[in-house]
Image 1 (cartoon, one colour):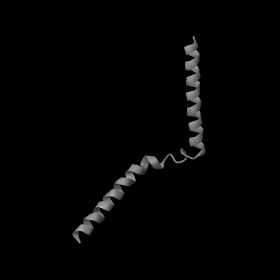
Image 2: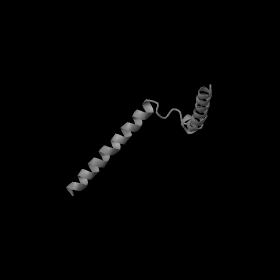
Image 3: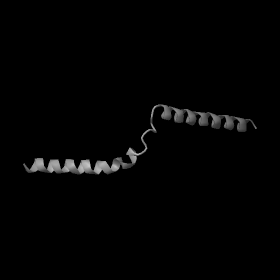
Image 4: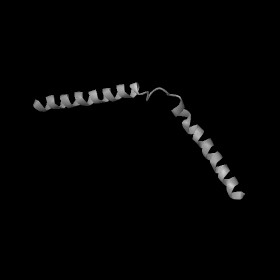
Length: 61
């Protein structure tokens, strides 16, 4: 029976830790921009392609 009380205490402690982490992330603005991360990978391809073209031009000159 003692182990059940210990496990309940541990689970409540872990839950409070996750709750504190959630409030910290909201307070510091981790969840402010939900749109940009979804399209960020689309912009990276264009930048890499442009850098590759610039490197190709430099090596041909």
